[in-house]
Picture 1 (cartoon, helix red, strand yellow):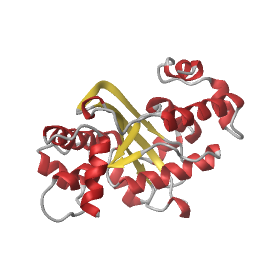
Picture 2: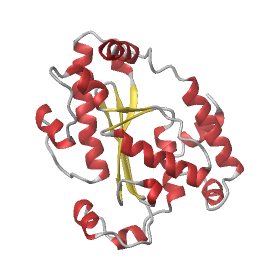
Picture 3: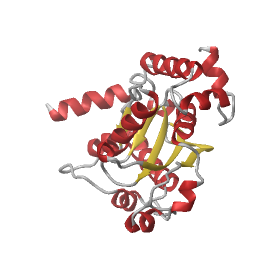
Picture 4: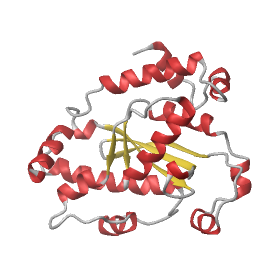
Length: 244
């Protein structure tokens, strides 16, 4: 694996000040090199044939000011947890607020318990995004109602780095629709937690929601393994048959 990637992975959550400084305006040469190597690693990974019990993913969630990044809504916080198969990687989590000098709506403050003061003191968006990329490396991302996360990640990655967001992202419905009998329905995070016997806590906190989403992923991934699915390729093939 490229030495540059190894270097960043070994920094324990801290990225070179030179890299971060470059992200204040135009990306630095170091940050561009890092992102290019990461993109290459993402493209070369063969996740579809990896045994489900060994599949390494990052389950994540974001809190935002609204639902429309193209209309100015922004990410307020990112929370994530690493998993291997149906097991959490103990204490391997990520959480950060993102600096925002605007004024939150009353509804968003009440929903997230995030204050304007906390956001004013938070790290800059470019710093958080680079640290998040370091954390996830080339792993698949898992999210609940992932179109929301995908839209914001594409927007912030392009705005700050002028790079396309390349990571594979899988919605929880990828497994829940396959393994739940009856008509497919859109279910909330709370509904899925109740169905799976998962305690609902720290709701609308990015890390809290990521941990609950991770528990849902673990529940259905183990169910897929028990039903004989070997890898993601098997799951994609079965879904294609159902849709065909």
